Image (cartoon, rainbow, N blue to C red; front, side, top):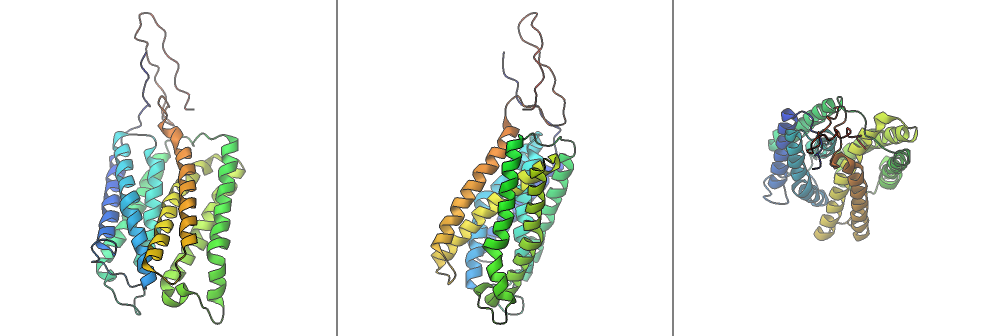
Length: 312
């Protein structure tokens, strides 16, 4: 008896088209930036340009290909497509919002304003992907996780929230709010500094805290957002690692080999955890959440039908 492949949900061509568009816009922005063609000149410091080169590398190596792959899954009706789509779309909205509004408009030279429709397109199409993918998830039951996996993921998200607040932002925030700040970021690129602070402390950390608490309390609604957030964190982790190595290579004043090595290790660990969360969606013979399985008749004469897939 041949093994029956995973059942397919209905094809989502709008989601597929949005993902392909997002990948194309992300790749175009990265190609025009300081990493490749250097046509798009951001109004930021030399250290900021090193960080953007890391972002562009991540966009070309990971984000754009991931958008294309998930778009193909959506076109083929794979049940994993809506969940997977949230990670690159969320990453695009997060990073390109900072690139769009974080420039030092009145202080540093550049021409980023001429490319604002492109940057705004990445953000707008990314929001469209998030909306469409969330709509697709409404027809699916929550991901099936063990209680142990829920607790472990909840603890991880709470740890991430704590690391974002204490490990990344607390010391620089205290310095910036003092009478005589000395931090390179707040002195050289204050717009980008405060935009990142607002997004991380106003959105990223609270979202991680809320979803992590939901998982620890056994709330099924928190599983899919947790998988999406961890996928986005994996992409962001590689972006931060690429930024760190780019700053080291460029000799930035605030560069740190230790930070670059640590960021790479964290990115690899979070990626491995995220892959483990997504893997059940690709098991052969698994029913699509929310879609009833159809029994398969045995090819032998008089044989009984096979039992439906359990979704486990």
